[in-house]
Image 1 (spheres, rainbow, N blue to C red):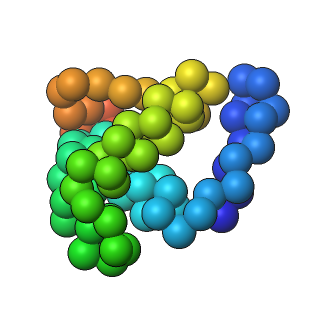
Image 2: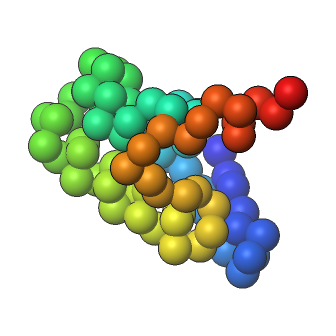
Length: 82
């Protein structure tokens, strides 16, 4: 999978793990839950290593304006406007 930043036209070629993170980033599920419930069971990686790599990946995408990082879930009304 490839994604592109509309802010600076940077392309990201996502590997399998990054694709799982991208597809799971719904604004409500914590990254730690994505790592422990999706990444670790599918790939041969420890929780600590997977979390560290996921944190770096998400930070990189957020610096390019592709993802927003938050310590709180996005309210459902902001995701699915009525």
